[in-house]
Length: 104
Image 1 (cartoon, rainbow, N blue to C red):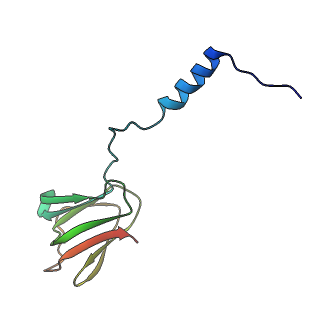
Image 2: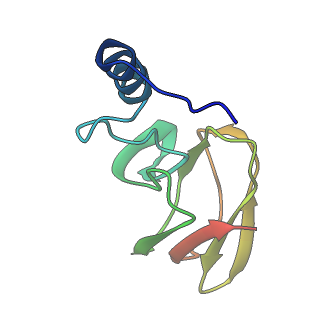
Image 3: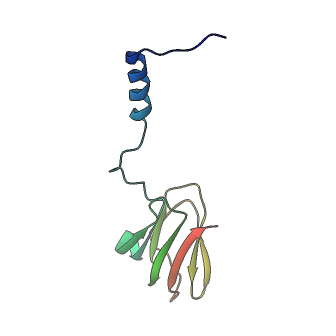
């Protein structure tokens, strides 16, 4: 059986390559779902930032953007609506007040 050994320069090259692809501490995840209190992405905004669910805070959603291939369930006091991949600048959910969103 042959013993594998690495020289110091080779080990340093492997370590450098491994850390080159690691995420940095300051890199923020790309938002997956953003909901807005005003039409056309205005007003207060809450985004998922890569989490599997978000707390919305009991307000009306008037627009949203879903930058993933996931379907999100928007939970409200009047039922659940789905946010499919894409954008909705003029959402109309009536007077429903939303409190959470999660992957369906």
